[in-house]
Length: 171
Image (cartoon, rainbow, N blue to C red):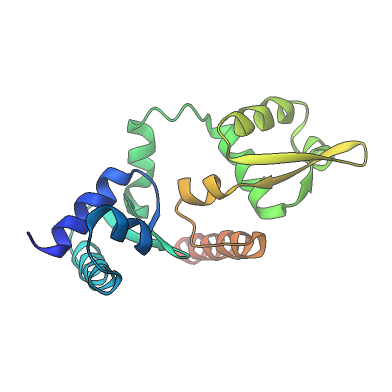
C-alpha cells in the first residue's frame, strides 16, 4: 500500500488535527515517510478541484473543507451554532482576552447565552476577572475553524487578514 494512501486514511479517520508523531504511531511509518506523504497529499488536494484540503495548523495536520466551500458545508452540517453566536465567537477571537462586560456593551444581554453555548462547545474558556469574566478562545476553536495560529495574537492576525481579503474582493 502506498504511504500517501495510508496517511490519507489516517487523516480522514482521525476527525481532528494530528501530528506527524500521531500518524507514525498509528501507521507504523517513519516520520520522514509521513512528512513526504503529507507534502504530496497537500499538493494533490490543493491543486485539484476538490472541496477538501490538507491543512497544517502549527505542528498538526488535518483534512478539512476548503474555505470556498465552508459556507455550504456549515449549512449542510448540523453544527447547532446560530449565526449570532458565531458572530460573538469571532468578536471574542478578535478582541481576546475580552471581558464579558465589554461584550455586553457591544451586543447586549444575549451575550450571556452566547458565551454559555460557546463554553458548552468548548470553543471558549472563561475565568473570573474583576467583576466580570475574561473570555478567550480555546485550542478547539482554532482547530474547528481551521485557523493556522497558536497564540491569541496569531488568531487576531488571522482575522485581520481575512477581513482584508474580504475588503479587497469588494473593491
